Amino acid sequence: MEAQDRAGPPAAAGDAAAGAGAPARRPRVAAFFDLDKTIIARSSAYAFGRPFMESGMLTTGGVVQMALAQAMYLSTGHDADQLESARDQLAAMVTGWRAADVRRIAGESLHRVISPYVYAEAVDLIRHHRTLGHDVVVISASAREIVEPIVAAIGVVDPADVIATDLEVVDGVYTGGVTFFCRGANKSGALRGLAERRGYDLDRCWAYSDSATDEPMLAAVGHPVAVNPDRALRRIAADRGWPVRVFRNPVPLFGGRRRAGVAGAAAAAALLAGSVALLRRRG
Image (tube, rainbow, N blue to C red):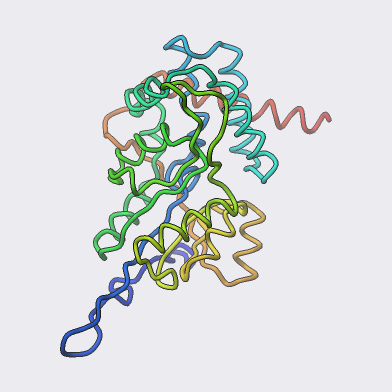
């Protein structure tokens, strides 16, 4: 196995009790995981387009728009401006939807749109951190109503262990406002706030992400790891000596064979990605 693929917490991770007698209470340790392209091999924000259309909440045009955005995301990643644009686009798209319906549909359709794309390496790494007694926190720019059902399925079941974007809800309905956008400096600020409340020793904590937009989050901990990094994050990791891991094995989370609809969606995404590349060459 390549050296870059071995970056991760050692078997003991410095957690053995030091010295004899009554040891002082050890600070808690956490592993912070980005979600998209770190735990799952796609954008969670765009994954549920088809289920929302099938439920009548989203038009065909909206699904096409989300599929194009997904193809662009997979081919190029998101910089800060693109993330803010995606935030505004999705907040506007869900205006008037009931938050409970979004959470229900996300939970019901996980087996179709998320399960086949969960990285086996990420699941193993989460289990390893838990074996070491570390807390595992998922921190994502996607909306909380989407993130929480996903992380519950992979074993991060406590909503308190999720930091995500919070869309404004009044009387159970999205207004189109965003009360907290979980990206960039906001991510690292939320991470530091959680660490202060829980007593995490950030010098002993871990963080995993694929995107240079998460540099503030990675820089906040003593053990930053770039996972499937975009070009900008790969350069940052090389400059700072951060380890790099490559996750290559998305597998069905719930077992069984993929449905035909999932295969069709994957083929459509590949076609859209090819069309985007062709348009770029012509542009």
